[in-house]
Amino acid sequence: MYTKKGEHMTYDYQGSLAQKLVDELLEVVHRYDEAMVLPTALGCLDLAKLQLLQEHMEDDEDDL
Image (tube, rainbow, N blue to C red; front, side, top):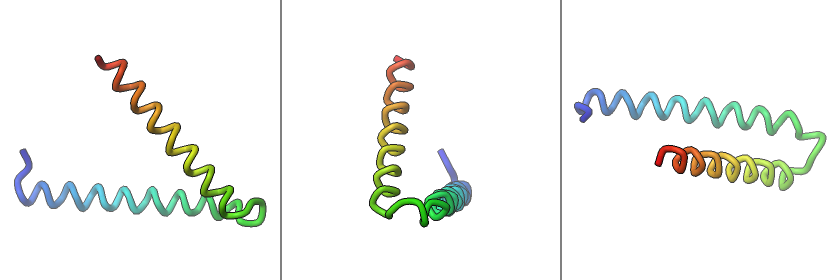
């Protein structure tokens, strides 16, 4: 169980990591600005999201 101070620090850290990940994803997508239209880039992000979810579900099944 987290203390209030520890819980606050954990949420701040997670928020910071999440923002860094978003910044990195945007940087990668912007590298392809001239090469592909935005809907294609968004579709690629959706495919990556689906792949991550599938991997996570497979990992959970392996733990059973």
